[in-house]
Amino acid sequence: MRKCLVSMPRAGIVLFGAAIAGAGAWPVAAAEISPHRALYTMSLASARTDSGVAAAQGKMAYQWGETCDGWTIEQHYKLTMGYAESADVEIVSNFVTWESKDGLHYRYNQRETRNGKDDEEIRGVAALEGVGKPGVANFEKPKPQVMNLPAGTIFPSAHTILLIDQAKGGTSFLTRQVFDGATVENAVLVSAVIGPRVEPDTEVAKKSPLLQHPGWRMRLAFFPADQKQEQPDYELGMLLLDNGVSRDMLIDYGDYAIRATLDKIEPLPKPNC
Image 1: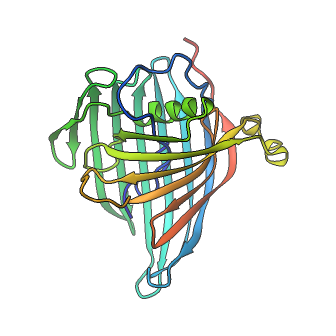
Image 2 (image 1 turned 30 degrees about the vertical axis):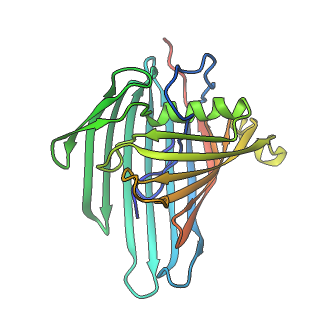
């Protein structure tokens, strides 16, 4: 499984992202994000008969926190993949990031195990020269290396916030280069199709005030850094609310798809700055 975040999953599942094409200033009125912790159940939504995938089940915990100067993301999941002709594989992934509120500085740490054995650890820091300008990612693990980020690159939290702002304005299609550090590769192209506004579901909204918000059905396609490849690595469908909460997700790898269903959500405190 390819690694993935949103602003929710990349190491097999990414969560958020996408912004308007081209460079420009940050929006004047940014989305009002609600810091929160959410728990999702993951299951196999569909699989082609020739995919070899027979089952998938697991749990994912996702936390979007706020500090005075930045956003923190913690995404942890345990997913067991069942195969028709081989042994099951248990994947445990932990992805932790910090991103400055001006969208120019970013720290990332991704760790993953398969059947209890370390598979890979990725860690580093990245910075942009300015809004719409190029930047640099300094990987510390798995080995030290420097990667030049192209002009117009955006980091995940700013990506999600801009996506919400553009959805509010009626934008239906967005593309942007996004760097999240979940894999040792450069920024990837994310194309997003945004549907019409969806009003809060009365029954669902009873579970938490965090769910008493409108949102939009979105379909995001994640293309590899190698622009010669015309097909996306995977696609992410979700209902993203205007406060940054994702009510559900569908991660489609083509041969199979995994669904993430929200079980529980709770607010996190805002910083006292």
